[in-house]
Length: 385
Image (cartoon, rainbow, N blue to C red; front, side, top):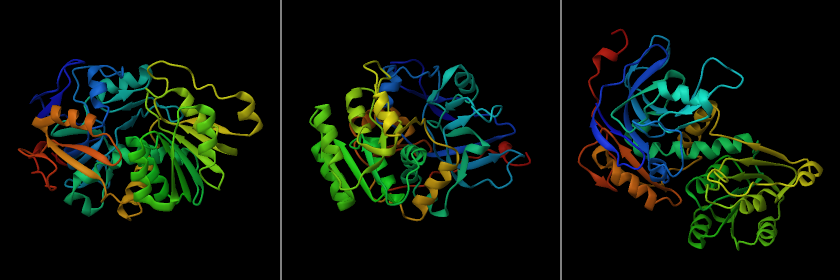
């Protein structure tokens, strides 16, 4: 198969022929139809983000695929199914605290790194080997536009955070980092889940206006000044309702004071969920006041990615139209253009702006109509072979 490989941090991805993946029991072989390129991919590949990838590696983080081979322990998946491949892989030998890797992207601790050495390669390739439990069938309509459906990998992340925060219908959510790629997704997902109101703070006035135009009166944009006390008061006053949940999705470069100002808008008995990258590249700690947490009975928790069942929930939100993918701006690239795709993603990381790599497509660039890729012939991997 053809694949894009990160041979060393700081080097461009190399597109070349590599051996086809070999699957065993508990694994599924898929042809990769579409995968979203994160806006920060260039920072990962340069080494700036210090992700625990071990080159050479075929990178990427989840994608849409078509099943070409299943193992004997799969009872519902069939060859030809169009599926979402969840990158969040958990070790199978510890139900309480399993080691986790994001296949082709990142990992947690030494156990996660060990798991990543086995499930090493991601979706920047024509074929990918995926654990059976990470393969989720999609509705029939997904086959018509796999590139658009690949953005569920973006939306599922804040969905996991909102689930962790116990968001209930009618509640008010504040999304810290709402003008970013994941933050804007969180605004859309919260409303799709039934949030009564979303407070959307940020410094980019144009993006704040975009969110207000798209979602109307259920979103209150707040332009931040940079002064922690002033911003906390402004965010808290943005809605008549108390803020039930704060979801933080700020990037690594954001100062902790911005995250703290947002967190401290939550009501008594409220919930704060931390999912962003604040402090990952150094800087001051979050330093939430102990007396404030204790006396207000505030719950503060971290959440990395999402539970397995969140994949099904997100697929349902999209399939039913509760989360509308139509406004997503999709720019498609084929595998030979992978470095162009990485650069494009870095330059177009705003709200609902998606860069999608389509490894089975050939010879097209930029914003074109969706196309279905040809299926590879992998007869030796089919059931019973």
